[in-house]
Length: 259
Image (cartoon, rainbow, N blue to C red; front, side):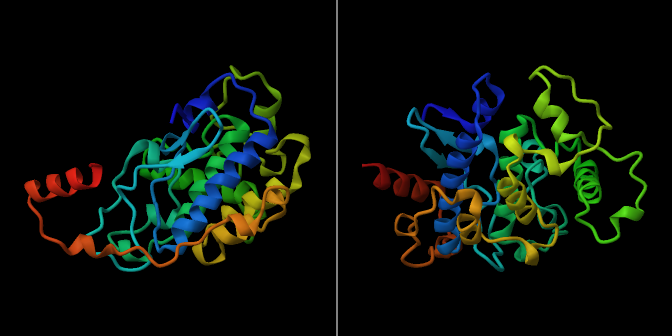
């Protein structure tokens, strides 16, 4: 793979809404397969999405992946600065109860990536754990995602107006305390993208859209083709996590898989 989505986003390349649809369709299509195999990636970010010259994408870095439900020996997610920007609220709030984190966390991450491809800058670039949660909370308030949000004082909320970013040159300096207005995040007033983002960035995991439901959304109506959207034949076997192996045994497995 020649590059990453992060490099594309940070480049001077013109990303049309059609580019965004195509990249997102591939990403969600991949998530449908992973989730059908009982695999939650939990590390999605533009850096972990690779592209080749045909604009085909590939997800890598499965370090924090786990099955849905309890997983005692899975790697717990650490406070990684770059991954933090894409982590779902339930990941940021897991408080040592890692077992409740599942595939819906990937949908949140993908929603953040969708917005970032359009505005060409991260949606929630938190400086630390608490700042990350505050940015998410402010986003929910500003965009009326929270019941009774009209009663909140929005004067000191974090963020920026996404419509401002769209109409300004790429080198426009973002002011820290501008408001986020999700109603204007898309080129050509693309209401389908807006609706999809709202469903992907539901704060409550139970209300968040699934990967399969994402593919069926109108945003992908010209790309969605169920006959070419494979599901896993069986769930992934996580039994390897229970194996006790020394370094030599690991080396042997890697060698046998590469010959």
